[in-house]
Image (cartoon, rainbow, N blue to C red; front, top):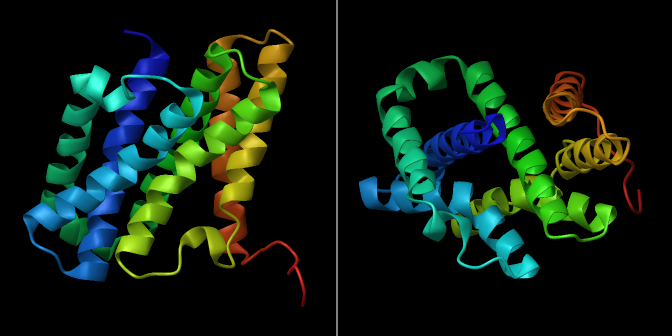
Length: 202
């Protein structure tokens, strides 16, 4: 079992957990509804990436451990719900590192398919953000992608750093950790200091 695979399982569990909590808050759904939205959150982006890359079967169909990690995250979120809601910073950190891990894992998979490095970075960004976008659309919320905070841009920056480091043959683990750290730092700093990109038309 490689470190990348461990990261993928952890990222899936974290994203499923954060997705379930957000879905419960926004929709007040039952167990089935929250589980469905949690799965959409953690599997949606990767599924879109795999479809665009022509990678079949989809990752969660091919590997039952992905689904097991997702269900584990959702169940844990039920037991830790009150604690996570009380400590909102922890929930934000969970989502931040899940997004960062999904970005780099998606970028890495796209590179393995031999696509252009820039396209690989775009695939990594889509892997991270599209599950949350689908969740927000289903719960009738404005997707975080279109809100003020820096989100997709942080993912793109980390993905580009990763392909650059790989191009210069930097160790895989160092490349992964450095890129995840960059995404997390950008997200945390931008939210803490309420930074945002310039408006298209102020």
